[in-house]
Image 1 (cartoon, helix red, strand yellow):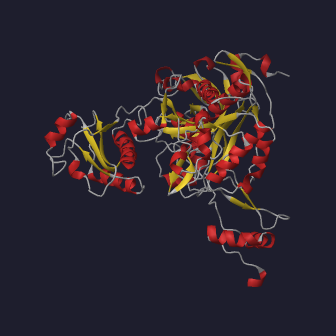
Image 2 (image 1 turned 45 degrees about the horizontal axis):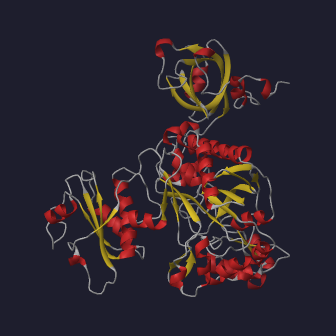
Length: 629
């Protein structure tokens, strides 16, 4: 028996594709060195012409085959629909002067000796791979769309990146890959979770699908899942407890461009570490796992750092795209004071000068859409886009005075925003991205990476104190005593040990050093108004000897979407997921979710009375019992 270790490098490559199959080669690997060889290839019928020439395509490429002029096989090819599965047996022939430089296999073709139809496709296909079709059709017939070069490339980039991640974490860094349960219980804070009614004998109870394996990661640290290894930090040797998991997560929030109801993240957790240790690990992991074919867009390490307050002051957003060269500027003069309302406290006017964008048209319809999006948020403030094509920007001040104030040229666009200070920063942060998108800056190739650090531990949302990251994040050492202050304003001044990795204006992941002290964790939950009864399992665990620990979660779908588009952060994650859902959480291919059968509904009523109320209230599903019949 021949094993992989006895084969040459070339044969090992072949073993991964054609071994264990009945083909001799893939469609994409034949070249002039195979001339005069007898081959057997299989794939999808991609093109045909003159009833003689046709192109066969598989996951690895395509190759042309030619039927002899007087062969009966011409009739078979003539009636064969595109996307039929075909086997070709023949001899590799040099194409001579008819070489096709646009094809990887364009130097040769296969002289057909035998043509076998393995599975005939229907003649009225709803779409062809790689041919433009609307999004709905592509999702409904996803299995056809998966044959396209774009999706083939995306899924293979994803596979390569995940494989490289595992190699780095397991082989180089000594991590232990641990699977955690999908059926769990509610986690306080964060997103809305999917609920699963529990079967007998747990009547009236339900599971929650985890929005992340956060609690399990910490519990594993308490459990000393110990694959120790030596790592050098600041010249000192430390031992750490290390685990990771490529985890499926669920959030009942509807689907949007950068997130699906179910998604994948790379979760990493370490004991006896620091914020610096985790951040260095993640940098090394990302650089090591970066696909070799995309080295031309790999960011430089070490990644720069910016504080949360610095990011908000300069860019108006906590995940700035650092490829955009514009920053927020204070208006030092009173040139825009005519915009001020007397009843507005903490009023400010600020601007962004978008250098070099004056030649880009920004229509009124685009501006109105920006206004609509910004007004949807409570932080939205009034703004004006001063484009050089406009004769008058404001009625109360001449254009030339504004031009002189901010040293504008015909190539510049000025964004002006005014109102309450915090909202002004937020609005300008959104507009900075919008203008950059219209100008094409955000879709340019290349990747810049940086860390955002020093986040506030707590924030206010809708008048309520919430965790900026999650309730398990530890404060920095100097602020620990402030946790026990009763004044919310002082609590808002606490800095958390939380860190986000941002690439091209997208938060690719975040992490923190965790609270390892049970009493402090209990206190934080009470401060946030979260019932501690739901967290007794974790609080107890922390009281039984929990090591200092911290971790990170990388959004795999978002990261791969950026890789597959050469750095474009606007690429939706559904382009790198084999079977994604729509924005409404619908799987158009299988038509899921579906209505429950009467038998399923009856079983729910019998085993879980409380499910009747919950399903009706949350999802509008009415359960009917025998008594209702």
